[in-house]
Figure (cartoon, rainbow, N blue to C red):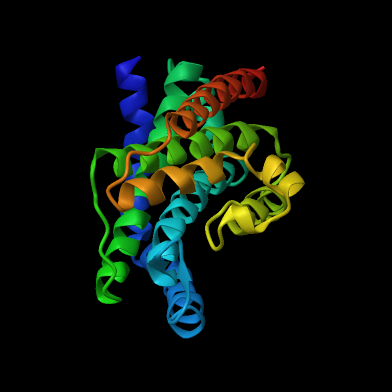
Length: 245
C-alpha cells in the first residue's frame, strides 16, 4: 500500500516540478490583486473586529487559496484520465483504490501548502504578520484535505475535462467569495449565516483567522473540517472504485 501511495504522489510531484514556473504566477497574481484592491486601496482605513481590514483579509486569502489549489488536483487527474490515459495504466497496476486516493489527496494538499507559503510572503511584503502556530497549519492542512478529497471524488464523476471547469464555477467560486474570506459572516442575514456555516470553507476561515492572531480556534470548526474531510475521502475511494468498474 505504501509503495502505491508513494508512486502516485511521486508522479504528481514530477508534474508539479515540471510546471512550477507556470504555477507560481497563478498562486501569486490573484492574492496580490485582492491585497491591493481590497486590502490596500479599499480597506486601508477600514477596521474589522478591532483589526485592520488587511489583517482580516490575509487569513481569509490563506483559507481561499488552500481550498482552490487543493481542488486543482482534479484538473491534473482529468488531464491524466482523458488525454494521457494514466488512470487506465493505474487500473492495470497493483495500486489499490485507497492508495490512489491517498496519493492524489497528498498531492493536492502539497499544492495548497505551497500556495499558502506564497501568500505569507505577500503578506510580509504588505507588512502583515501572522502567528504561524500549530493551529494555523492544522487549519490549512484540514482545509486542503477536505477539498483535495472532494476534488478526487468529483474528478472520477465528470465525463470530460470541460465539465470540470463547470464544477469549479458552481462549487468552488461561490464558496471562495461567500465563506467568510472577504467579510465577516455576521454582516449577513441570519438565514444566510446558517447556510454558509454548513460550508467547510467558513470553518477553515474561522480556524485560520483565529490561529493567525494567537487565539485558539473553535473546536467545533476543527471537528467539522476533520469530519467533512473523512467523509469526502471515503466517498472519493468509492468513486475511484466505481470508475475502475
